[in-house]
Image 1: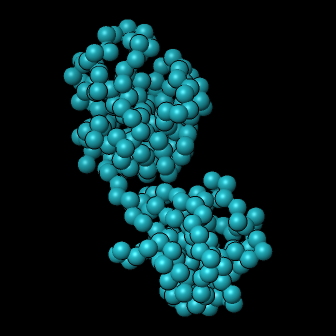
Image 2: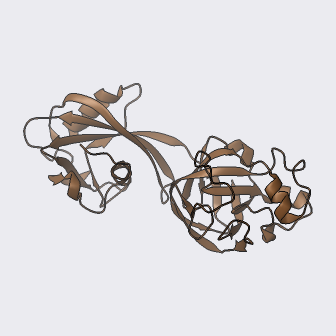
Image 3: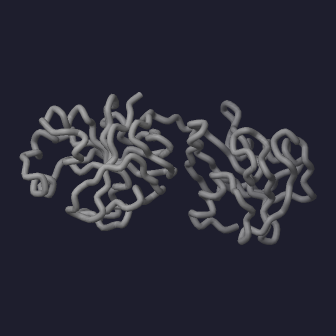
Length: 276
């Protein structure tokens, strides 16, 4: 497990990177106040994730530079982690869930700003670009560790624009509003899992099931990461509270006026623009 050694923010393209002890990081954007979060960086290609850029302190030191200076213009300087190995993987950086997007190869612009010869020494060693999946706080000293993705299922029973939700009582997401759902058993097909969870929690029998969405969400307190697939289903009758240790009760809520706070996967689905 590695750690965050330094955090730097540059407010505009070419502006000097300034150290920060703690920053707020937003999903799909990056560090508040940084040029790339404002879409004002030197490179504006939206196809390339630049929510966070990271570099290894060990590489910086090999170049004879001070990692505390932020001279290589990466947001996060790490120690004790091989960033190349995080390419394409989910990982936690403090309370922020990231996905390694691609290697951050050196460019001529970096040489122009620093006045140093860096292209060849930094080939395949220039760090990592990462997309922020779940935002949060990031501090110097925070741990960096790979994250394991678990499977989850949410069942959306919708009637006349209203969706069936219950307030969670389980430790995971306690107090938030969520539809029936859970985790698939070993080898259990998705739609069969959705039908089983709905029946076990509410007594409702699912009909006409179909997959309608998918989210990836991290929970910083537990370090759990779930890929939740949402299944829409029709069901006759009214729900019963069959697992009182998991939900406080079942209620119908208009999708246009969902209760707060929402379970993180449901909030992600709503932000993505899903509408029943």
